[in-house]
Every structure is written in C-alpha cells, then in structure tokens.
Picture (cartoon, rainbow, N blue to C red):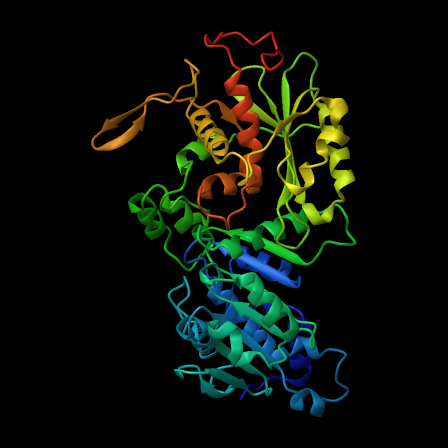
Length: 506
C-alpha cells in the first residue's frame, strides 16, 4: 500500500487531481512526450480526434487518461457530498475498438503502466506508485467483455464496436476512448446513437484516435468537422470538437534511427501515412498523390481582394441539402493571369449553416473583390435560383449533376487532371522518364495549378474516386469547373508573357 505523509499526500492529490500529465509523472513514473502533453491539455471538448502516424503512442496516452479517471474520478467533482458516496457511486470509463482485441489493448497497457512494466528511454522501467494495489480485479484478458476494477471502485471497460456497441449501450460513462477509429464503418452514426447519450450523465467526453485511412469516410468527415469547428468565427456555436495531428518522430520511446530506417524503406506514398499520419493515395485514386502534392505551394496565402489588371474566375458549387451530412457550398477564385494558375480565394461551409440568400451574397462579395467571370453549378439545390439572384453578374450556368451530362462531368475532371500535369502549356507540361525502373521527373517545376495548403481541398483531391459517392467532392468540382472553362478557352499558342486579354470574354 502507498505510504506517504498525510500532508504530503494531500498536496500531491490536489496537484494531480485535475492534471493527468502530473498524475502520470508523480504516480506512474511516466514523462509523456510533448505531443501527448498537448493532446491531454487540449482534448477537453465533447469529441476529440487524434490522428497521428503509426507508433505515436496514441493507445498509451489513452491508457494514461483511463488510469487517471479511475483513480481520481474527476467527473464526480461537485456531484457527491461525502467520501463514502465518492467510493460508492458507479464510475465507468470505456475503451473500444473495431474488435475485442483492439478494445482490450488499452486495458492491457494500463495494467503494464500501473505495474511498472514500461521500458523507458533510460533503459529502466517506470516507477509506479500504484503497483500491486491500485487494480483490485483484472479481467483485461477475458475473451468477452474484458474489464478492470480499481481500488476506488471505478471500472475500465474494454469493448468491441460490433453490433453498434450493444455490449455497453446501457452504461453511463465518464470518459470514452476509441482506438483505430478510421477502421470503423458508420462511425458518425455510432458516435451519435451510442456514445453521446452515454456520456451525458457525467458530462464526459469522447476521444477518437487512429491513423487516417482513405477508406475511413466517416472518420475523414469528422476530422473535417473538427477543423471547421476550431476556426469557426462564432464563439457561441463552436467548441464541440478538437483535433490534433502527430508524427512518429514525436514518440521519444522509439529509437530515432529505427524511424529513419523505416522512412527510407517505406513506399514513398505510404510513408506519409506511416510517419506523419497524412492521407495518402492507395488504390485507384483519380488524381494521384504526386499531382496533388506538386500543386500545393505552402508559401501561398489566400487574399481578401484582387489586384487591378489581373484576370480572375470565380466558381460556385452550391450545397445539395441542409442536414448534418449535407453537401458543402464551395466558392473559389482562380487567378489565371499567367502560368501557373493560382487559387487566391477559397470559402467552404455547410449548406445548412448559411441561408441560401446569404450564400448568394457571399458569392457577390467574392466576385466584387475579384472582378471577372462567375461560373455556377445550377444543377444543385442551392444553384437553381442562383442565376436569377446573381443575374446582374452575368454568371455562366453549368449543370453537371447526375441527371444532366455525366459526360460533361467526366470532361471537367479529365481537364483538371491534365491541367495538374501541365495541360497545354509548353513550359509547364509534366515530363517523366524511367531510371532504374522508377519514374523520375525531368522538370523541377511542372503543372498548371498552384493552391495554398488548404487541408479540405487537398484531402478531397487526393482521395477522389469517380465512382465513390461517400466522398466529399464539392471542392474538387468547384475547382474542376473553373479550370475547365479556362482551359477550353485558352489560345492554341501559349504566350510566354502574361496574358493581356481575358480569353474567357468573347
């Protein structure tokens, strides 16, 4: 049993009660790496999403939070009046995964941490003050419904996502952590129908962790929702989500030389996922990882206003509905004065968040800020009346929806793909050759399109599949409309100087 001076014990308890980082350092002999500390400090929203590379220590930090909850019961603050009630009230936390094997993983790791079996970079194991007394009932290895009971009476449950969480649907939970969430189908429905109602009683929160996978559609969408929530200007309506990236290099428990070796060996595309937790092209993605990455220029910044004498074209793809999973409205502007064409303005918001008249007003403001042509997708719900409301801007109407011309949509996408390779440009057309069995770029600078580092746009481009209806495509189609009209009307002979005539105006 832990034997400390009563005053010292009280001082430590007060210090660590609201700080899992200090709890880990003092009681578990664990010094978390900086990325894990950042995650613990900020993952206080209702839904928190950690999307790191492999071997970041995501299950490890979840285990730390589970132990802290079970020993400190922080969600009981202000809910109980005595120590007897504090011990008696049922307090449960949950770790789940796509399978029971993954669901119990954090429990087994929590046991190793509590028992001081974690090998530290120093070559020694962690000095846990909880060893041999904190866990009173260990069923972490059970094939079904694994759990661990702590001396405080709190329980750590390990469960599978199977059957939409039927095994824990009746539980009130103070904290939930999900492992490998990118591999869970219908994650959004699972979070809404099963998890959120379970954390109401204790005002708990939910951590979703996992390395992003291109096929994890709901996980990708929830990351997008978190990114948008974190930058939402209206402070009264934001604050539901938090999301954080992470790199394998941040894990101080891994030998750096081993990571470097893996980075050298791994497939050039897959290493971005393995090391950095980035979305990558796997399988039959339409545009390809290399094309999209080549188009990204991190030094570019979006602008509020255009410059006199420049040539601009604005493209508006309106949302198709107003539900939580509705389409997004995307309004973007391309500067095509010279090669390469540059994305200078980008606005993207959920259709249900902004009334249709206000969306039209935003389009008007963008075209006013960047005078030039306007292209509207008039096949979508929001675009049907846009021609009338924005008629004074002389918009070009485009209908590429499924009930219209699927051939036109294919032409637009093909034109965008070709433009990413340089299109008709003599100077920026992509050229490759095979050297030692691998494709090698012959030009340092190629491609007709340059975009700033806009996560949503890049993700859509990298993961776009023509036949995949689950993926977000709003940004892709808005960009495709603009590039299609530019490329169809460019002169056959490319001048090497800046174009001094708006070749869209004829």
